[in-house]
Amino acid sequence: MPLLLGTYTQVFMGELGKYLAKFFPLFMLGALFGKVMDDSGSAKVIAHQIARWAGQKRAILASCWACGVLTYGGVSLFVWHLPCIRSPNPCFASRPSEAPDPGRDRTGLVHLTMTALPGTPAIQNAIPTAYFHTTPFAAPGLGTIGGVIMFAGGMLWL
Image (cartoon, rainbow, N blue to C red; front, side, top):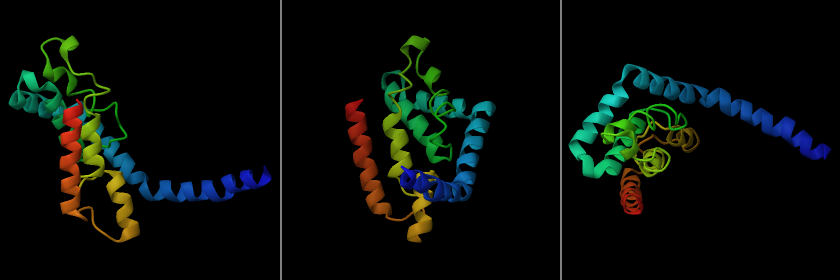
């Protein structure tokens, strides 16, 4: 037990502190940007425009695209209660009961912008750049192919 506790306090906590010190600004700025988008109404305007383009019959597609645009634009994916989930929801239906389920319908495209698309400002894309000495646009061909496959599979599932 003392070995486990020592490893936790001396190794894990030290490395966690380094990680937080290095990447906290990315988390914080993404969260602040999401809050600004929410408070200013920008997220709702983006969602309404995409809903208008897609039409009432394609609410799930429009909902995914709205959240994808917000996250690819810099809103932190870890801030689920901000505009990525909440703001687009009322835009897709005349009554709130007709709106897409916020917990399910955007998951596919939100994760797509987090992991596959090249150049995304998500922290999952930024962290490896420091270790592999690459840019956020590394492997654009493979990322785009992976993104298309993820998007198609997600839309088929939804």
